[in-house]
Length: 333
Image 1 (cartoon, rainbow, N blue to C red):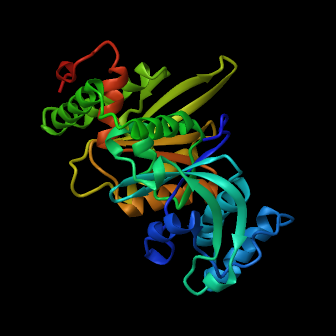
Image 2: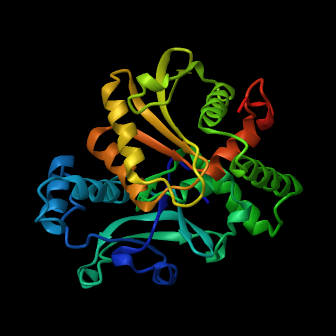
């Protein structure tokens, strides 16, 4: 591994819906789809022309750029942003692999029909063996659940590197990790137990935001709710302020939260000029449609929506607590 890694990514290698990890390991390559969009490795292309090629080649009958914009974003990161020495985590059913970029992007005409023409040479770390998710940090596990094909993970460079080191050492997860996972499971079970109602869940999330450093945290009165349940200000480097808008959904694991909730928050963010970042926090899970809607919102409108599922919520509670009311049972239900 290079001494200084500048960028990291998460890449799902399923072009055309087919898992290509075996071929990628054999050939020491990363693979991405949308092979009909030829010429994207021309570095003189600007973003609009880049997207136009993807649109005309892969989505010629679409009346808008929703799907082509998403696809072009994934390809742009793979072709333009990945550099030699960068780390890439590739999730699979059995865990995840980690690769280090070794070469520039290539377009191989002989692989167009199978939709695997865009490739990059890599060195597979951990002796080309999968890494058990149990030894990865929860932020890394959560990022690998994303619906993007290719996503940035620069904030997780250390997490990825430490996972590789731990896997190579052969060490098992520590007692602290095992204890943390048990606490997360117990916390989530408590949230699902039915002892907390919708109002109590909003207060739980509001106190969590305070523990995360949120200032001026305020819950929106129900008669004024336009899609945002909670607002919270955060200071960045003591110089600037961002305001986060949160939808809090007390939800059982099934059915998963759908795209309609994402659309509610999107509309709420659009109505608030000072808010451009949103969270949907649920005690349940998210549907694939919800994840796709969040991606579309960011790529089409520039409004970033993070999806915090029940497991991630419980993890945050275990990590930072929930303010002065440090136990879930203290909430007035």
